[in-house]
Figure 1 (cartoon, rainbow, N blue to C red):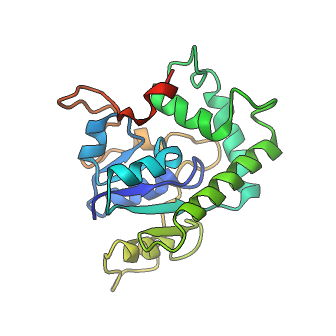
Figure 2 (spheres, rainbow, N blue to C red; figure 1 turned 135 degrees about the vertical axis):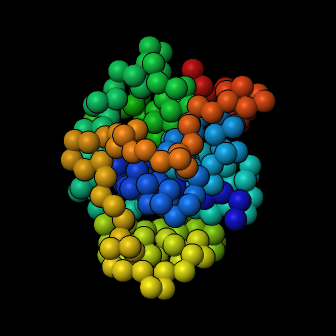
Length: 218
């Protein structure tokens, strides 16, 4: 396996998956904004994976992909809360977030072009369009898995997909930890682990990102 990309949208369980895989010995980047971060990590989740999975598929052949599904009636209020918290730093011109992060969110949620980017129907449409595009792109491929992490045994399903034996594990061992619940949005920063990969890791090309989207980064 080259890399594992978690391509579910924010608020579908990307932090829970990332923490669980740290505990199974993987080096994990929850968001990655440099080439070096992608090189160092075994697993990359969240931005820009949910928007750039097609480009990453070309850059990292023989990788695997996991889409995270969530009941839309639970996801919409959760993403509304997150986007409101992130509204100013996500602004394409004045926001202080990393340009890769801003592009990933703005492309996916049409934050700059939507009449009301927090509208429930608009966000539901964004979710449905993303899911439709992902399932179409990975149709009939064996390197792709779709899971809902709230379902019992879903971590066991992921571990089996990664060829990790779940024999002898307890029910607790094959369920995901529940993180970023309610108004929590950044449990990842507070979680300490030696296998965490800095999303801004520098390498030979300093903090350069891939060239495939230079034209659209502002």
